[in-house]
View 1: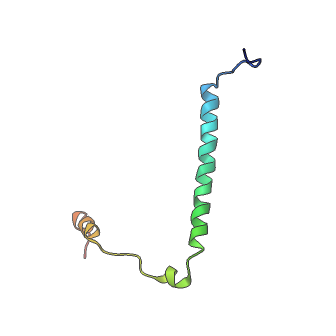
View 2: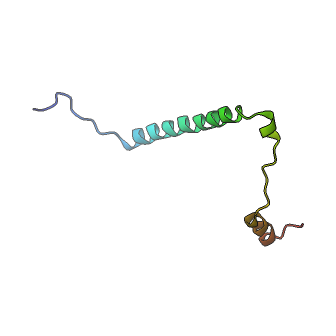
View 3: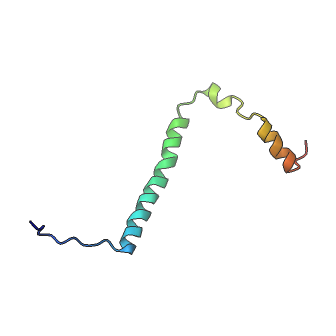
Length: 68
């Protein structure tokens, strides 16, 4: 049995247009999810120290000749 509707091939330009639209939607949704997570932090968590001078950070400073 044959389908009554013939299949139309998707053109290259149409494929790229749809792909680009999907990437735009995904890029717009990323910051929204991050903002929602940041709102759940308490004031104490926002003020805590996050920077840690680990060995790989020290190596980066040494290699790039940052002053101490």
